[in-house]
Length: 135
Image 1: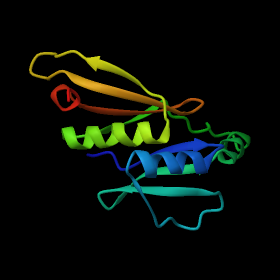
Image 2 (image 1 turned 60 degrees about the vertical axis):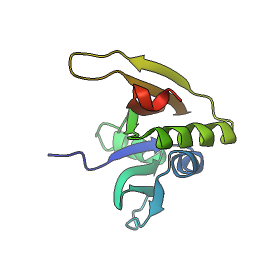
Image 3 (image 1 turned 90 degrees about the horizontal axis):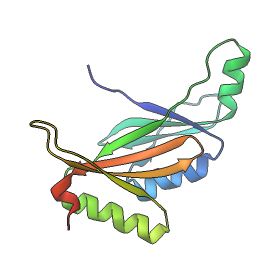
Image 4 (image 1 turned 90 degrees about the vertical axis):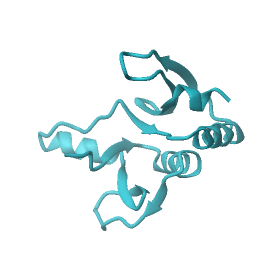
């Protein structure tokens, strides 16, 4: 089994799309003609993140269904060059972020985390091996 995609419901589709494309490095791609506005964002040729206009949860709640929610998404960066590129794009865009370190646990090496508050209630995390973040 593997994760297929995640969905973020937001009232500010454009800000979320711009951040995820211009800073995180996803690409916008084809999306079926759903009745609610949104975007599908791709990584490695696959639609991994669906952005949906925040009007969708209200309609779902009215129909007796639980409105979708998400705490955060995490993207793994596998090289120091990817990490450095992310930092450069964050700085160029003037985007604030917080970092943290995940301590080594057994055979699992220490990692660096970077968190961006994309919108109220939506956080995007980037994670990499600690040596990649120590340039």
